[in-house]
Image: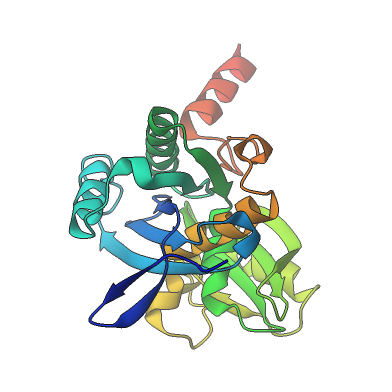
Length: 255
């Protein structure tokens, strides 16, 4: 079946199916990306990145994320009703940032009736180094002298196998655990930079990409036949307890 496509000045601009909106808010950078997919689910894998914006905002994401989404849609002369998939990084990362992203995704998704798909932020970060056969250790700065870390291996199709589940520990401990499974992994992320263990890679590789959050979610959504009921559970991946939970536990132990 011939696919309907948008053309500008005679140039084929790719698929013109539903939109996927992707959010990544777990770190110091706020990321928003917009993908255009093929019209039919059977045309799986055909997609086009319309735009990605990444802003360094510390953890002040809540006051900017919705306006950034609105401006992006307007710039492409699109409307929210075109969105059929919301992809969001579920952490680990800053507790407030992760909550902002997931609450925003939930609000938009429920309002539009769109599918909501969560993606591990360490997986999205590791995708910066995704070349066939690569083993990538992704580290996100967890503060307090620790990092969140996980190890992935990528195949020729870009699929990731998790070789070491997400953990939180000092960077040296995470690196030691990873090297029990991989001789020389590519080490990247804000945690790798903070503790001086990063591989010599472009600086942009150390920031989790909203485009990669979207790409990973799209792959999973299409493998599920674009069936939102088959989405992963909607829960944050905090990995370690929050300061409030730690304080409560100490107080209970004291009693």
